Image: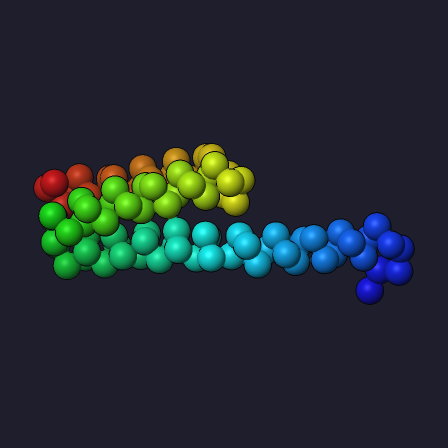
Length: 88
């Protein structure tokens, strides 16, 4: 454990930020999985709607700096590719 005052504060700050960021990333991953499941079931309409919400969640995570922009773009492109392959 750090014994310098600024290092102790930094540890506490990092933990606080991690706790705030965790639900955003988790929600993003959950929406991505939801789209993948709907694509697997071949539910075109449901997958389209879920894709739009997943894109919003990915963009929000990128905007907050939780996920790198290239990572977010890759996730969106991958989902769009699977959705297009479904015949949407």
